[in-house]
Image (cartoon, rainbow, N blue to C red; front, side):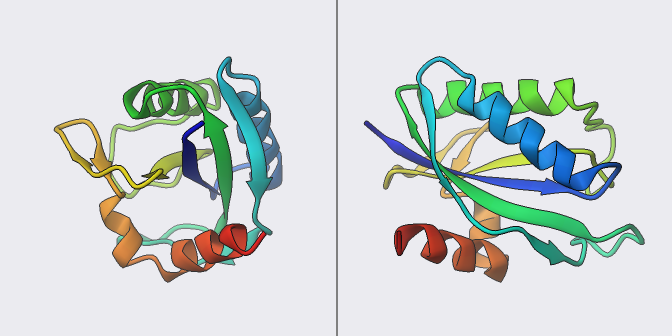
Length: 134
C-alpha cells in the first residue's frame, strides 16, 4: 500500500482542534489509514505576512487513493474547516499539504511531488525524519 506524507498546519482559531479535525477527516476517508503523526511544533508564518504563528505536524498515511484523489480529499477537509484560498500566504484554519507520496515524482498544474516547499521548510524535513525513525 502506498505511503503518503501530509503536512498539517493551522494558525487561526482552535489550532489544536483543527489538527484533530484533520486527523479525523483523513482517517475517516475510505482507503486511508493514519499510520503515525509527529509531535506538534509552533513555527513562524512563511511568506512575510504579519500573522499568528502556526501549529504544524506531519502525518504518515497508508492509502489506496491516488495522489490526485488524496489531494482532492485534503482540499475537501480544508473547505469543511472553513479554509479560504482567496489569498496566497494568508492565515488559515487548516492547511493540508501532500508533501510526499512514496517515491513518486509528479509535476502537473494541480500537483507537484515531492512538494516544492520540502526543500525550504526545514521543519518538514525534521517531521519526515521523525516519522521514518518509527
